Image (cartoon, rainbow, N blue to C red):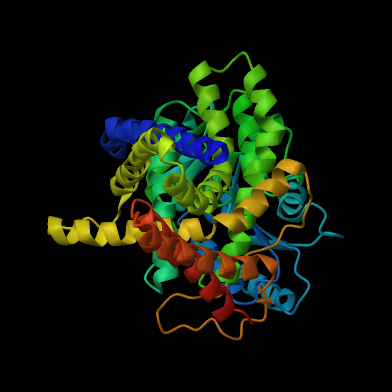
Length: 487
């Protein structure tokens, strides 16, 4: 009961913090949309700053040519940018990249395929290696699965007129959003992160993070913050906090969208989720005391910063609440003297209402038919929440590893070059068998919550049955896709 109640309390606090970001967003986002439409005048070449574009890649057989072609097509003077292809690859993609680089060089664009002796530091190490030889004031970074707009630089560079700005981050779009239910649910969650969390924090003057790609750094900012470090799995979050603790400001542009490819198989999504959640936990351990002790940032920003880094722990709370909800059902039946406690705990339904408002505010598919629109949203919200619950055990393992200091390699998310619904993911050479002990437990947990559903009928207590149905579906969905997508 103590664990169950504490986890519910933390979820409530998390929901209230998310609600504060919604309020920030609603207050100013319309005004910012009108203000954040600057475009750099590239007619006066002397006033156009030089930009180094970094493309960190590792065995990107399916998307590397697409990436290079897209960046080479930037609407920016050719003599004002250089492309660094930071290639750590170990397979046949090295030769494919070399041919593409030679082709782009022949058009007059300054592009170079850069190698290093080892993969120390993984992506962070590659970015740091490239930074040492980078030209110009600004560094743009794109992961292999991104397709930036030709006007990306002319729409981001103008904001660096403010000398305090260290980073300009753009919102992610999704080229394969409608490929499957899995991609639609990912887009649903990411849209909320970028619109509400990033912009809500930015509007409130709180810390945000560079999302690892689709953004531009001021080179001086990276160097002043101590450069790229690789002691966590989320080097982008790490450097973001070190830079903002140094006094640098970040700018988030909601209306500048950089398209990207969403993972289409569960193993790829799990790899990505593991890295993000474990990296968040590692950064909480690394940064918490620095935030608290810093005398130059407001108390409110400290609170938001701590909760931002603590976000990964919400999966621990969700899993604890879910797991103990089944025995709680029997405690409630056998110990009626605790009835008042259970009545009080039912107030935590407000968490769901707050989260529903949070995701509704960011919902990207709002149409004119309000009834149909709300029905579509509600179904997506329930499925998204259920799937998030289904990933809670997997992500809890990652969070605990982060808090306990267990180190692990940077496991890349395989790219598929999936653009249309006709594209296939089977046969991808980078896929590995993802079936492990965690997958086995996810299957058992689906059965465990099926037992919770059956118990509701045995005990004639249906208060938790919607929760258990969502948990049964969520763990079952994650387990089923993990098995189905296994190589």
